[in-house]
Image (cartoon, rainbow, N blue to C red; front, top):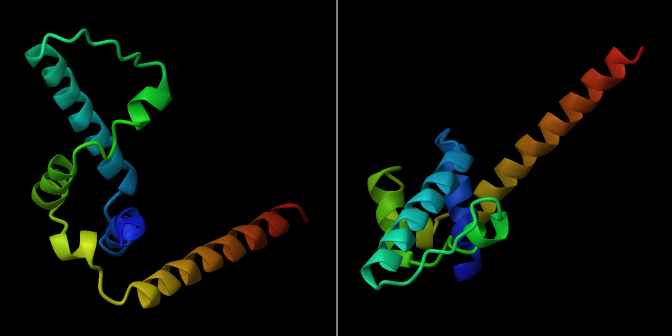
Length: 115
């Protein structure tokens, strides 16, 4: 089940026209702020380098409670959609059909531009 959590969130965002990048960025920034507060609270030097994306990226998923709270309260994603999405395969197929259609449309447009 855990491997599908990000897929569930992405599908819900796609179906409800929520920009997944905004969701991911908000999670990342919120966790970074909590990390900074934790460093202050425990008197640990904050050594995060904001130019190093790997360090920022590994903070995501560090606190499940924080992530779930943000997803449900800020983005209004139902908790069932995060952990136990219904009709996952059917919904995923619909997403893939849309991706295939968009790719085909882009390819046709490019080929017409090259004529």
